[in-house]
Length: 233
Image (spheres, rainbow, N blue to C red):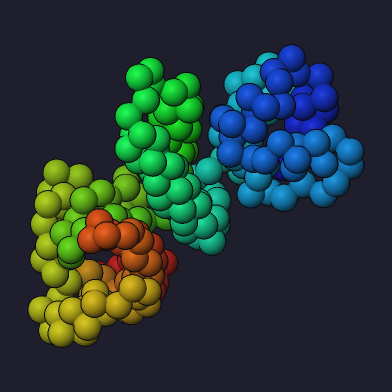
């Protein structure tokens, strides 16, 4: 990471820290602490790079290489980012509903700000989900709603061939009982035989976490080949 160069960009940029805080999701106090020499966490640094990568490169002449891109971010960060997004969405949605119940004559500026921040959080999550080299899926009630390119590549299916189908269609029949038991858990960690486009199966470890409230529940899953390259069984 180019921490020194990025902090120098923060010191030189004409963009107000309040704006940077709103767009990146990093608290204003954290940004001030950085400028005063406090340690910088890579996770927060990634948030800043995701939003201001073009400005940072132009001002600081920094080459943000593939090594520093979200494609190589660790699993903990991916899951953490999704948790942050869910928590933020729930909080802001509650505040937005409270404002609507008061039925103000004019739409408060706050609603526009909330809408912009929700959009930014979604864009940031989509960037990580679709750009990471780690195979991932998003399901609701056992049905695939999103799959990323890394998962399609390792299994050989295209997105249209997977979306809208039950997870069990991609699990070996002899593993269905174990898979169903695991699906009923909020946190999952299981190794199963997963179907590939050539009709063969490969052994994969599946880690998943359930998110959501009030019946709007979905799961984000991370799939890892037991053997390098996911060879056929």
